[in-house]
Amino acid sequence: MAQSFTVQMDFGSHCIENVAVLWGLGLGGDTRRDAPSSGTDIEVPAVVELLDLIAAGAITAEQARDKLNRLTTAINEQMDREWEEMIELMEQPLPRAVRKKVRFDDRWVYAISTDDTPDSIKIGVAQDIGQRMKSLQTGSATALELRWRARGGFPLERYLHEQFDARRTHGEWFDFQGRPDPVQEINEAAHAFLQQYAEEGSTNS
Image (tube, rainbow, N blue to C red; front, side, top):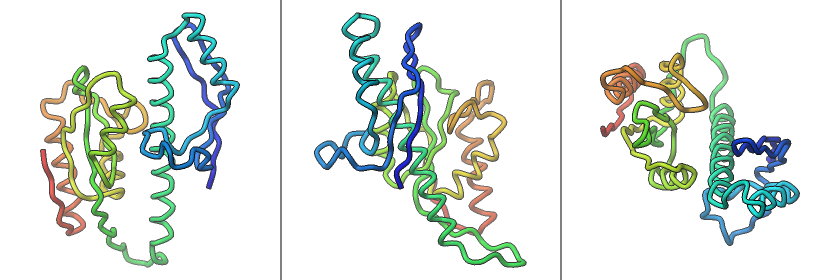
């Protein structure tokens, strides 16, 4: 299920517009499958334009690398989510007149923030938190810290996103500035969800 994206890459006053990025074609092979950007491909002319900016001294190689890592990590996460939603819909039974119980998902839901901005928290889901942290850290210029985690998978993550939607800044990031204990708020909301559906969840602050 390949998909294409058109993105804009900004570097201060410099901008590379209408960059074509492809996901899901598997052109990269197995050699670099462990790289966080694996699964995405970018058009060669845009790469050449990027190299020209580096050669001219307009940007550094580190800036280009970090931009590409952040871009591909965001795309991979988005496509992972869409794939998981599709699988979940396929697995659901036909609608009934009474409300059905949510199928428990034992993947980890996590909350992370950077050392620089601890009140800006990302709430995401992953089967392997260590691998996801490694992937996200590659695309972040500052150190990331795992603040909280709980079993509950996509249903729990979706519930938390809805609960804190008013604090959403972009994507899966939420601004808890001014709140005395964001981790406690997230944990209490998760606990309420898990109890509501009579599911056992293991949480770790």
